[in-house]
Image (cartoon, rainbow, N blue to C red; front, side, top):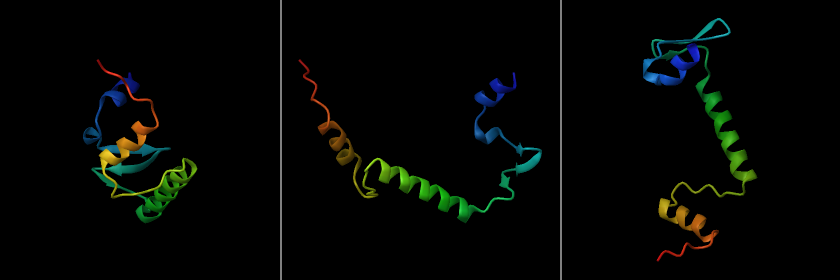
Length: 80
């Protein structure tokens, strides 16, 4: 029953989060979190994944250009 409640809720409905008996979020505020450190870890992880997948990070590439790169790798569909 708890799993269904957690799965069907959206984050705006969450008031308090407890992890291992400690309050981590209460009334929308996070506790005991070093956001600059966490952001650095996320960025390092993202950079590792991009490098491992051999994807160049280009924040200014348009969606159409990205789509064209993907489409070129596949055979074109013939629509009649």
